[in-house]
Length: 216
Length: 227
Image 1: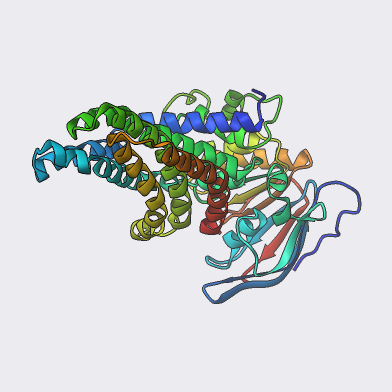
Image 2: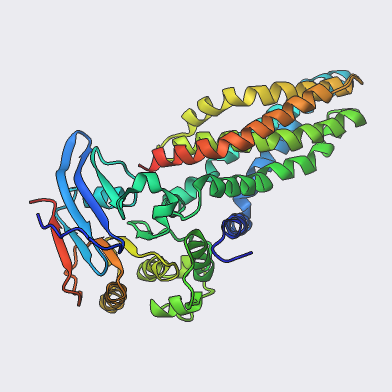
């Protein structure tokens, strides 16, 4: 298991110590330690059902670990609550977009739930994920890949530093994957943090990608 | 309204739910239709004796309102749960209980308020006197928000279950009983030309209690359902 040294300065960092997850009486992982600092990415690997999604949900503070703790800047994330969530953005299996709303309405809601980023318009964020021109089309009429990109556009409109992504490349075509990889690179280059799972081989520019294999 | 403020998120979420309801209005009309049909069937079923209708009227209208509310409850969180929006609410930078309150308010505006509007019509159908009609509207105005607020806790607890409908009814109906008792009794009392202030005060107290406790309980229930 790879470890990175804990940040000694005051830059934000996410640290997990001794994490254990039990699901349906099966121990998925135990004694898991890692940390993510600015500009670093954590790539979770492992077979289906090895606990990747469960671990990401623990990092989101949605699911409680059976043992261990996760801290953000030294404070327990479950205690921080909304103060932690204003630094995070999560895209899960389900895109979290409403099919009866337009992409623009969906994105406006996503932005209002977090801390809005200045210097980017909602239209600009849609352009960045190649959805320019689809602002007012009902989301129901978009393809699965386009809906996925709309879900990912949420990452761009808030100031969240930690992106937690569960299979972000699902249903994206090759071009879509390149677009999203570029977003991830830009996020890491601007001192962002990343925790993700992916079955696709992922090409990130950053050298600071740590891998954890949960099946090992 | 500052972007990123709590009030901004509250209003946007309220607006979003109202837009969604408007775009799926065929489904939203169901509870109202149920309320009207059940109440309208009663005179046909038990006979058109004015005295009898006047006696059972308050109870009939309130039971129908209660069941209509129960019928519409599942919609509060179901679709948000299925498309992943609910996770995003829990991961918001704002307190979940306030977001929940916006959703419950939207639910009441969609399903509770229409009942208030058609109630005078149904009161005529059941031969309720004028004073009783006024009191009926007052009790509906105070009581239906309580139904939405209490119901939200039950839905939040059962939203993760595939067949949660039965458990939802069992969880929520006992908590609806006080509202039913005080509200129906208030209308009966008004029909007998007696003062109803005590009932109205108790209903107001129930509303305040539900308003202050239910959002917190709903937020906690949602966390349990999604973990």
